[in-house]
Length: 455
Image (cartoon, rainbow, N blue to C red; front, side, top):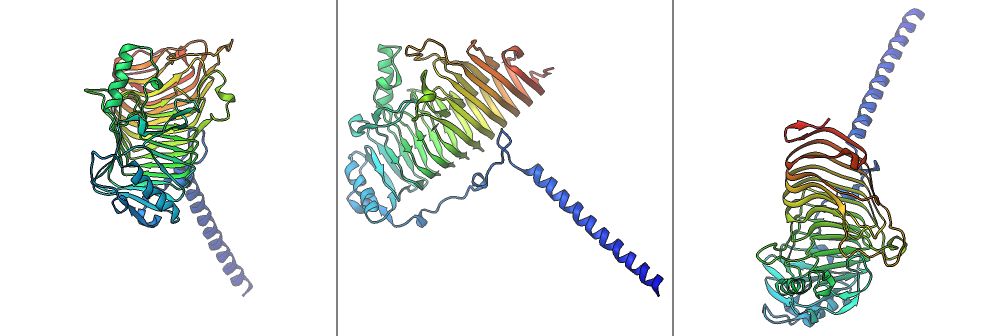
């Protein structure tokens, strides 16, 4: 009996051992798979679940609807109705918040100012159209071109309004033609004139606001930048269409999305075609910009599943930027960009562009990567030494692109480039030349230019 009992116990122990081993193996395999599937920022930190939530906001969940036509606004595209539309916003605010609705029709307005717990919904068939008279945009403390100065209000102004949303399938139109003509006339009179010499409003300006979401609307024909986000955290820009013409009249400086001292920004599913940069990362300029509290860094920016039509660059760092980190652009199509990636090295500003990855891109651009000094409006303001600018840990991979110039770079002794990786790239270029000496520590892995692999 003892022998039988012993054999039985050994058999049970063996089965228990096999069971434990199997469970451990399965657990290890799952952990290994989980590790492989982790989504990481370029510096190796894990991308938070916030970036994986692409759900659209239902405006009905945001409170009472305030249709502007219920508050005295007429469906008349020629009648300026700023005051009546603003009264609608104020009424929503006074009653604890709600959604201001632009219904079907075209409504002309100057600068509008949204308040806490108010939102904007532009219905399908509805158009909010900006006045082409700059007097309809008050001159107020603002932020423009890396400076905290007084400037003209935008059409849509949002300051310190956490949770603000713009929803709907309608259009916000800047009506910018007269501003564009004025700019080119001034440029004809003085080829060195600055952007700020010709008074022009932006379309959307959101400042010091967190948990922002814009979805589905069309932004078009802005007089100046199309949308500008300054000192904001947690911004989602989903399925927007942002356009301005580059012919027959060029719409100058109509950047689609300007991200300025922001943390956690998701740009997903957007179409952008503008007569300047599609997405520009900004944050300050000047010889002491890094000492100015109104300036700062952009961190954790993801741009994915977007399409770029005509633009000066799909992704630009600068020209007013001091620090950009953890920038990820992926799964995008570039149709007619002047540049895929542009690193503007501004010689009067200390800059650091680090941990930037551009991956899974197809299409066409004039330049694959463009890195050169940005000397327009250069001013050291009396500083004796020239600030140094750094770009490092830049990765471009899984890209199939037709371009005119592959390696469009020319730097000075004040520009320090290091730790660049080019991987799994297929480029057809009129000029496929490259110079490894420009970058300190450059890696080419399976990079094919005009049918030849770079050693």
